[in-house]
Image (cartoon, rainbow, N blue to C red; front, side, top):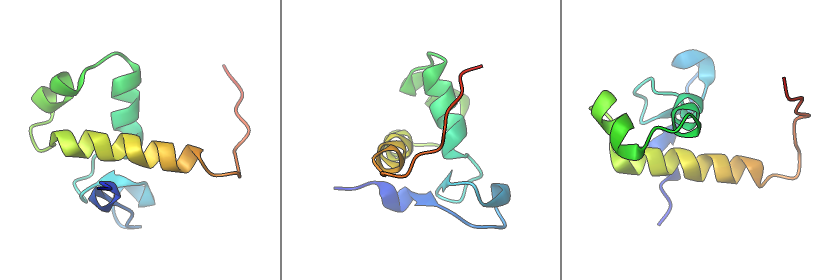
Length: 77
């Protein structure tokens, strides 16, 4: 079952960035936390409003976005 319903986009919340359940936790931030080495448990401890399914939804959203044929040029810093 898809968790994408947990991801919302509203121009009045976080400048229209995709967020989890309208809670002002951008998908981008959750992905950055995971990429930095934080575990799901670490994130849930630091952000008690979040649920495991929210983090999984962020990952599912990222997978869906990167599966698109149109890509944005990436230049490593």
